[in-house]
Length: 302
Image (spheres, rainbow, N blue to C red):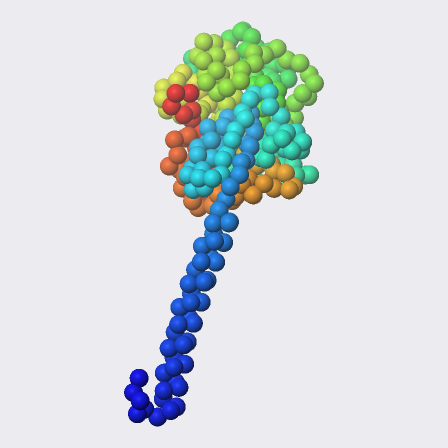
């Protein structure tokens, strides 16, 4: 410092140096507090997701991507054809139920839409069916293919149903306004692949599957026909624009007191990052940028 500088200049330099030191100290303290705060706010804990529908592999792929972003958070799954997802959430035994319906009493969010494809054996010449005919088949009024289309064989229609509590069956029954107490003779299967196997071995069978695996099966050369419903082609775009009549929402139902990990997982699924994860994941589930349709194919080894 210049000893010959005027007193007011020396004072100004002193204040400047003091101010810079104080600013650096403040920045250091703020950085340390911010770092500690970030550490304290790191997402930790578990989230249990429960379901019974064909979207299983898609949700598992999302969970894996989420865990990579949050190494101290875990997304666990319980998936079984006899599971009752909403009841488990209501009891507090699960954090997220994956269902096909919005719930009035619990927080519910639609994360995607899934079409329900009505399928037959490729050797059966039928290509289209009306909603009314479909209703009569599944309620047992139409029993023979000759009653469904001209030149149909005098052969009994063999129904392949899904288990009673699966979302995909509930969607079909609600759309057709079926009396669920009425018993109709049918073969019951649990999974998409079992449906395809049953169809391949039975020319006169009819069933329904998630739109994604149905379109993929046709693409891969499986002997299945996806029926036009009321003249509407079963395709992703017709599901997206809601012209295809049989579709279901894929819904996350959560507890009122939401687990922080569950809440963050839902936010991730709905976020752009989650959508990119869906499109690049190995599950075969993709979502259209405008709010999408579920496409699901089994993971390798399944």
